[in-house]
Image 1 (cartoon, rainbow, N blue to C red):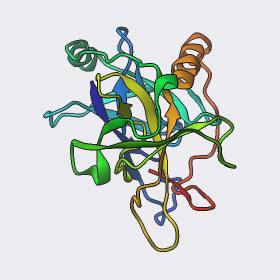
Image 2: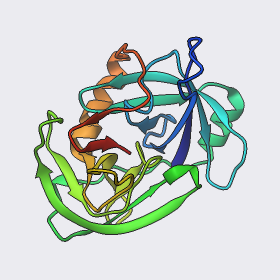
Image 3: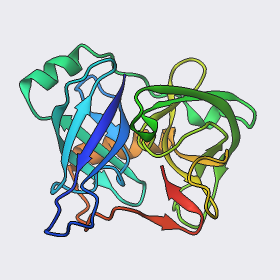
Length: 219
């Protein structure tokens, strides 16, 4: 199941800093853990709230672990009511991202521009793209993803997660997707998330409101 992730930043007395952001996440464990991006869930000074499909109420969540290098993070519902809601939501399964080939149909579900749930469909442009700003190979696609899709899943056509949407290329003054989008490889994400849950490590960093490397913009 796909969820919305709302983030509240500490203002630190600076009125010029944004205080809210949003992203997406996916329930990928029968224990109720939610996977999202590190750039969505950076540290415990931020307040996290989860919203489920077709529900208005937001439920508090706790950051369990994250990893800046792979851009992955794991959240857990923080209260009994939220856990009860989450237990009624089905966890989705990991697929095998190694089987992806250029031209394969895929789709993404997320929370773009805080507009609510959206599904977009496209194809794999290149599986295993290596870029300067990622230590691992990523999946390039033309699926339309924008701000708010961060941390949401990329599915194959069998409904299994084969990637975690992370960033887009958006050169010049273009603010949204131009069809060059990147996701954390699903097989690598599954491996890293498993280790994060064992170690419960949180990368401590000053939360920034906007990050970009060259033309790479977090979605």
